[in-house]
Length: 444
Ligand code: SPV
Ligand code: MG
Image: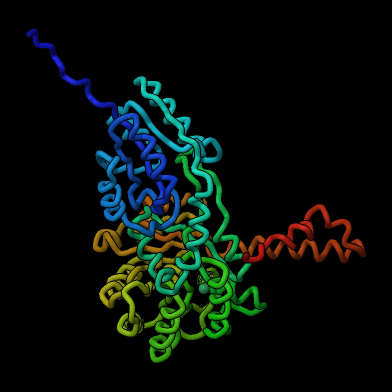
């Protein structure tokens, strides 16, 4: 008998990326289909990648890894750190990439184009399986929204974001409608093959007061501020950071912390000023009286003692630079506040060149590399968010830009109607009434 060499040809490999944290039958169909072509490798997006490109993952990476590893048709699971497949495809060189045929539009089409380009480099093949009818990840996401909006879940989102995202991008929201803008506005980010959106909302004392026609001097009381928060919370799901002004008296602050926590607010930022609070952007044009740092530290400490969950954050806002007390004073205070238990530091400045912010961050990071730092770059807005992050920022707040865009638009319209004696002339500049009627869809 002659011996033949039956060394089997190596089995083909099939790469399937899973970028969703909700696993549904559509994924199963793609995996089963993929298994017909060879050994299935799942490229599972990490929590960081999902948080950066989509939203906070519900199931964490480890849980998802275990689920996929235990699926019969799956040979192994590897990490995919970005929406782009490039790194893994070049490393693993799978014979096939399998995907549903529903990725030919929008941002996904860029990912698809890149996959095709890389497969061509080494002779791999793309197999597209028909999209599973009746299953939509987006629809599942929408159905989950109310569940993802309980106070506990919402409150916890900010800390989770700080863990998973390079930085948290925040926009002012001062009522339900502007809350909806911050919740829903998205732009395609071609450079990173992803969609950009805001992560959280800033309930500003300046804007909340100004929308009510009142000055920003702690005149709008907490009950009214809570009404604003509730209005926003009813129609949105993103975490809320409250501008808590000075935090008031310690005896009141400890109650207020509990109230905010119960509502599902994620963080309150309080500033180390005392007396009649004036908006920081007046700088030294207004009387800005700094609190005694040890008294302020007591307030932080009392607040931390009062909170009942782990998730709520109390962030200490340093007003040294606003009051003209200098970087040395800011650093000294930052150390005291961190020592008192502050969960983060906000350093404010109205200097245009950003030099004192940069210097503060450099010095602060020498002794506190981890504590989140909040910046409000209203005056020094020549810096991109990425640059502020490089300087050391973890939370970047665009603090008043919706108010500032709404007011001039309203004023212009009001003037023009007055001038013309009718409203026809403004029709082209304002939203058609039909669009207003359908702006807020009814819940089904
Ligand atoms: C606010 O938005 O109310 C703030 C930030 O406190 S600032 O107006 O820059 O002081
Ligand atoms: Mg304020």
